[in-house]
Length: 422
Image (cartoon, rainbow, N blue to C red):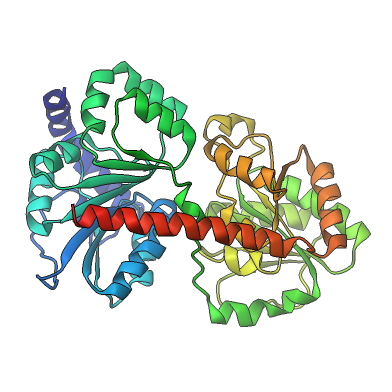
């Protein structure tokens, strides 16, 4: 089966090159480094030869950012070289900002083409490999097995949809998953799916997204401190349509409280102008905020037009609605990560559709941190209570989240060490 897959990828290779060039034309690929994905790479890692190289791969921002606390831990120990690969432009920029001038090299992951992989492994010679989330590439795994390099899948996540696809080629799936030395699963569902494929050494510590990671932006903190004077709530990671629910909630809150500010953080920044039009149609004073800016005047709605700024606003919020949870057509790929807001003591609200984060929401609901809402009236009633309570339960929420995150962090560090000394 792996041979058939290899032939198929080789046949597709010329078309994938065209696709990457097409994406480059639309600014979806790095204009200088896009070739790392499709051509042989002759660069070498500038490293201390006495140190082991750990290769960590996460496709996009969400996956790779999850592992930043672990990377930072090992960098402080100064006994590991890190090669980090990602697939998206935004994740590459995030890695370069986070680890600038440190013992870390970032590369875009080459396509799953046999000769590209052989060249890649020959150049970088990793001592251990960690793939994150659902990154399962057959040609990579076949070559890694042939070189007997220890590899693990951290925060492993297999959806029901993916599971059904793998079941069609179950023998192939069993062979592919047998390459991994062990798994740290993100949820119990994935553990059951992996067992069906006879995977070995499955560990369930909890989702790695619980691990605390808060890079403070002092400039933002200074500019946003004025929000302490207001009743602030946030609608985060919202998708098209959810801005209407959020604005309707704001209008109801406005009738009951003075100094209400609603912070809208879209999942995709290209939706900014549509959100602004909705605000304008209700005569709301709005500021489209960019990272580093001051809050100007007394806006009723702040629309965040920057990546990586959610935590800065969560610190001033009593309540947070997490998006991609009220749109029925997305129900099979629904929900966004609520952990950051919960860690900062916010009360979390979400809609009916949370398929990607069921396990996490189950934990938060059990600790009275999150609740499901039906509509804007329901969201308004809950936030109204939160404003009146003035966050009396915040400390308990924060303590619980930190305790869980620290436990997962310690176990993940131990597992990473085992991979390096295997």
